[in-house]
Amino acid sequence: MNLKNYRTLIVLTIAQCFGHTAAPVLVLLGGIIGAKIAPSMDLATLPIAIQIAGVASAAIPASYIMSKVGRKIGFLAGTGLAIFAALLAAFAIYQESFTAFCVASFLIGNYIAFLQQFRFAVAESVPAQQVPRSLSVLMLSGIFAAIVGPELGRRFSTVGELPLYVGSFLGMAGMLLASFFILLFFYRNTNIQSKDQDGEARPLGQIFKQPQLVLAITSAAMGYSVMSLVMTATPLSMHELDHHSLDDTTWVIQSHILAMYIPSFFSGLLISWLGAQRVIRAGLVLMVACVIIGWGQPEFVHYWGTLVFLGIGWNFLFLGGTTLLTQSYRSSERFKVQAINDFTVFGFQAVGSLSAGVLLAMVGWNGVMGFAIPGLTLLVMVLIFAGQAIKRNTNSLAIDKV
Image (tube, rainbow, N blue to C red; front, side, top):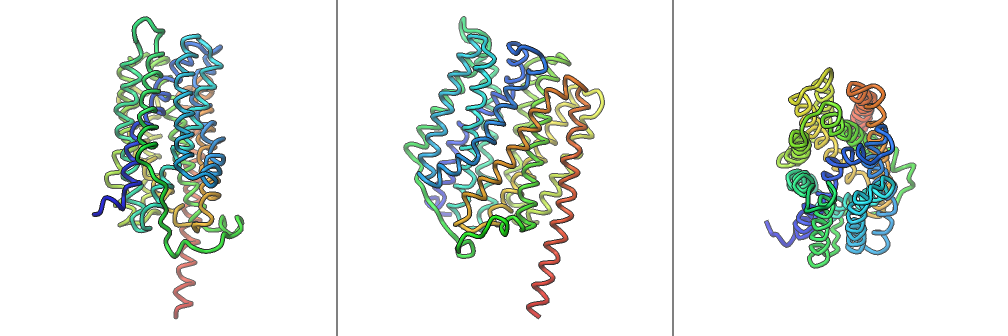
């Protein structure tokens, strides 16, 4: 393998290792900090929900900016914003300002919208047949983030005489600064277009009539919404309500994030061998298992099992959906389709995250788990619809050839 052909993949994977730590720190500490400085317990998980709302609100602007100025400038601008946001979060905790902390969380979410564009930059830089494996390699950066992010939040939670958790966000700013310099010195804009993706841009109505595209967006959106719902509620439920230690809570979150990304060692190969639809079906089964394990009165082992199955299911749904997405548009259509996809996916994720704190306060942990069921049911219906439509199209092509 000629590594020069995979320069973009290598650089963005390393940069994402550092940049991706922002999300785990906020996932681990957002609800805990919220419980300490928010006006009421119902608002404890609001910073995490606002972060995800920030992702959704910046999805279209991030894609638009990169279509105008190129991906490198967009990546640098997004990372610079994140460094400012991490410092603002540290200041907000120091001042015990819940409003400022929510603003910082929103800006971190804006950054994640730019970070999510890494996967499209990678997909555009390699031949079409290499997209699933290249995306799975990029997602391996999450393993680093899973280990370092929560550990960063825990180990730097007490720094000198600073208030609790201020140091966690100063450490986050340092990680983001490392990502910024990697992008600045090593990333170069690049684009490889395959012949079957060339051509004039089609009307959006025509593009979104494709069953494959509907399945791509639905699988990623439902995967993210259910994952965000359960993951957001877990630290607050474990640490604040069930009184598990911060170390135990950290381990569960780390295990979850590892489960999100370790399957990337083989999920790209699975998609190449079995096809994206089968991998999406497997992800759906794992999500259902997650709900079953978590139902009832969870102990530590149930929290752990729920979050592990949740992570693996998310990996299959998100990677399978992203692979289908890159096969559903032409090069001339990529920015607008990518923007609509990310807005939809992270909009649903925001709904899941916003619901977590309210459901936890009103109906408890089982209410959180029950709220995941409608989204999974929707995915079942779309899988059936898309499978039948694709089968009909295949049969029609076969008849035409005869």
